[in-house]
Image 1 (cartoon, chains in turn yellow, cyan):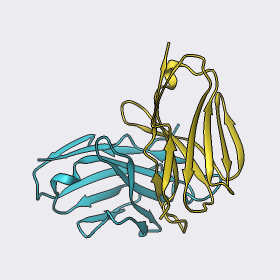
Image 2 (cartoon, one colour):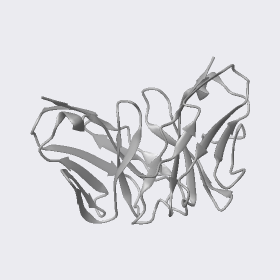
Image 3 (spheres, chains in turn brown, cyan):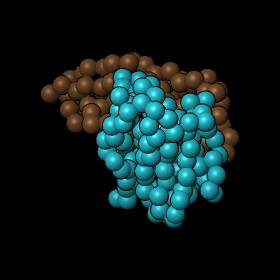
Length: 111
Length: 117
């Protein structure tokens, strides 16, 4: 079973700052997910990536498969980016399995 | 955008009672999942379901849990005899292809908050 570690657990920054959230996992994977959980509890899938880098608007996700590490970056952060950001990897790596989630990074962007 | 629908949004039950949580996945999706999140803790995988059978389950998904796709649209999670520790937010999710596929996107419902008294 894969283990997921995220850092930092909590992050408070000022509007406009560049944000980096890190994720490491214990077992080799085919793909990694980044998700966002809103204050109301809803979960939204942001990215799924298996290599290199993906960009969506102000969000950039990178992964290094050899080092078992991924980062999520937010450029020009805004208060509406305040949420919990969660890294997740396949639960056991086979078939249509579920995800093992990290504990999440609670991000607050202050105006 | 298409969405996964969960009902009810809140469910209160007495310990020992059976509850059924309901989900309507996105219509062309083939893979279905249940997750739970105990207050203040991380989201935990319960079970995945494909082709009318369980594909994978976690150690949490013991004999008191069961899943069913009774018709072409609903996907249900049944907890047979609820315990206090079953109190959590339960999320249903669905995807068109398997989660390990590189082009897959996972869609979550807004959750059912289960409170066991």
